[in-house]
Amino acid sequence: MTRPTGPVAILLDLGDTLMDEGSEVKDGRGTTLSADLFPGTVEALNTLAQRGYRLALVADAYREGPRNVLRQHGLLDLFETLSISEDVGIEKPAPEMFHHALEALGITLSDYPRVVMVGNNLERDVVGANRLGIRSVFFHANERRRTRPISREEAPRHTVYTAAGLVELIEQLSAPVSGDALPVWSTQDADFMLAHKHAPVICFD
Image 1 (cartoon, helix red, strand yellow):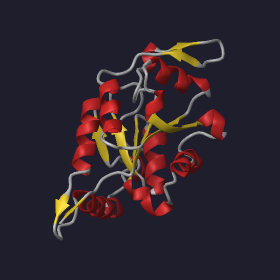
Image 2 (tube, helix red, strand yellow):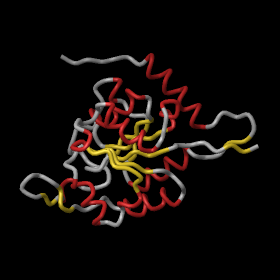
Image 3 (cartoon, helix red, strand yellow):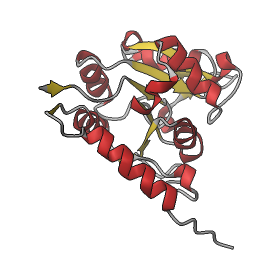
Image 4 (cartoon, one colour):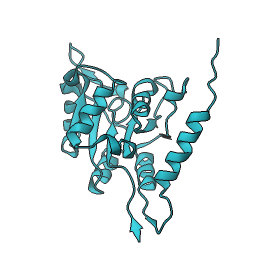
């Protein structure tokens, strides 16, 4: 018997995850009016949506900025919900940012381990996801921010470098399994939790 596995939803950051922050055009308030996306982003998001993955945006931004960029590239309709800090009233890694998106998707606490959060910020995206038991994916596209974890909470479950790499990761996590074998998803969860529990913490003065 074949059983499906994989994420019930994919949460995505915007800046330096989907769009290149260095290309942003902003108004006087700081709202992003337009921006370039990283290569392959349009294709990757369309592929994920076509394969049935539920997409949501979780971004620290002014209300209209993410909508402007997603609309510019014809991607807005791919996202079932947008959790934007100006709307929610708080920024990541606050759990409310993630709860806001997951409640809109109808995802309960028991399914949080099968949610993926993709972002470029260790302190916000990765820490916020890890604290809630969400699978964290660090999108390492450039060196604009710190890219090395300095605590256990900042250690991502996975790291990808391109939009195509993200699609490949999601497909790996979603590979069906047969019989009584544990899915890759479950075995990776167990390995990560054991390593995370016993990992040393190294502090530098």
